[in-house]
Length: 200
Image (tube, rainbow, N blue to C red):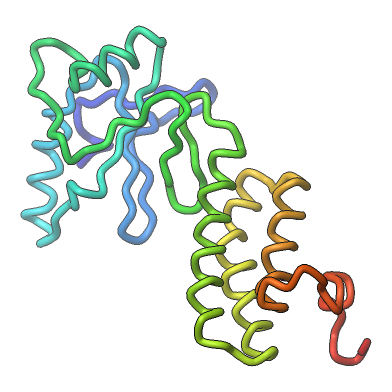
């Protein structure tokens, strides 16, 4: 419905079709051009939801303004692209410059540095490890948990945006602290912990 609608989306040089939406599982990203109406988008989505028996979670909806600084500021301050349009409801977050928005495992946004994204992800890893540390898992358990959270929560962002060495070292220290319960001196370094059982 979106692709056949009057919404213009993004016109990318070298591609025949407009970029209007990307979907993955239950995540939907919609791209609106400056002349597209947010109200028109909502009308299309409402029809689609009725036909599919689904609904969009407004609480999780986020907007990244695209375009000139003046346009972005206008959208954030007035919560609408054009004065004639309806106001975008308050539960919907409109990201300001420097604020990242999570799309799948990446964190795009205007004037977003890689530190914004990695601080958020590593904060989640730390929170998970802190919670598990209170349960006193075994060394084998810590090994599995460090792979699940230290590896699992960082994998997509690393593939999408890369992991600077600074954050790699921070993650290594986080895992070592988890292994040795925050001890100032770690009996084994990360290089040793990464060895297979056959390597001792």
